[in-house]
Image (tube, rainbow, N blue to C red; front, side, top):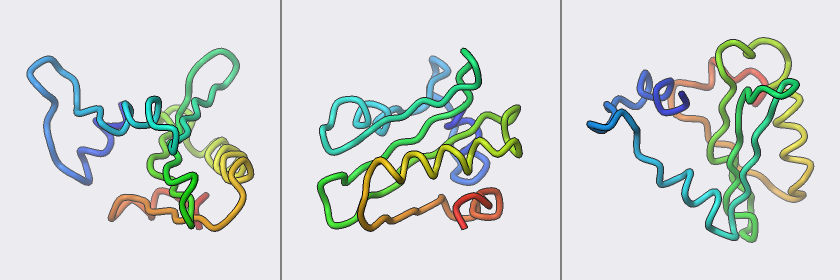
Length: 107
């Protein structure tokens, strides 16, 4: 769903098998300098966040996604605050070009 939503801003089509590239996903789970967070509402997944450069001079909120059905519910603000609090120090938050208008919780 994340890659599908991002195609609006970044272009691109899925592979013949219906998937989008997953290099960030792989890195988030395999690279020790990354952290992956899944957030839920009850037992239902509603989004995720990937943090990279945990050992660098500034942590980077690499990917952040909330499913459309949970947007505007306050979960984005709640979760971004929680993720940032788990990794003290300077941060770089780099939303995809053109998406900042949708990410009021990052302002």
